[in-house]
Image (cartoon, rainbow, N blue to C red):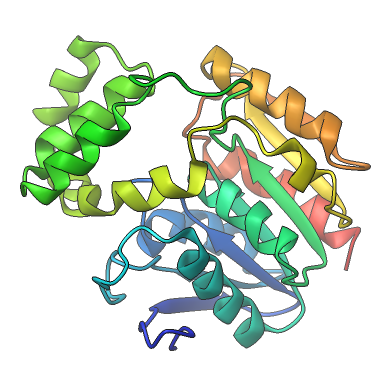
Length: 256
């Protein structure tokens, strides 16, 4: 499918029933959500897609970091899917909330740990400028490592990840990290914008996630009218699809 500015967006669809659209986070493409999609496919038509610059979607060059274009991409997917439920993970949760705030109609909205901060970020808080510099310098591995350290990952964990089999996939997606950073912004949680949301909203977190995630989930739940929160025992930011799917199924089914 094609977004408003001509960017081609790759979409994968499985299942049958009411539509669900999944927006993935940093270091993720549509393949990352396949297990979750398959777990929901017995009751829903599930649409996963490659955000711009990822997988089989186009990598645009002008302008590279405009959040409005990512919102338009998701809007195009939602329009093609028809009346849909929307689930976003991490920066995909930020994207999902911004899309709904911009007027994209959805039946319900589920957000897993949107990575806004409770207060405005400090200059060095995720190495925003440094990550952009590393991407421009064509050093995706260093950009990925800087991003991970900015989220609180210890050096030894990052070093272990760099030596692991999944690092090549993360390097391939690292050039899109500035897109995630542009979406999240540097000025804290947009509470006034979130207060304007009027769709049923479920805000999710993992019990073992970092303190920033739990604090942000608490704040987001407070400011979105009627939102409710749920915490998954034993889970962290990378929630297991088998744990997540039943909760999403119940939430979406009661709002179909």
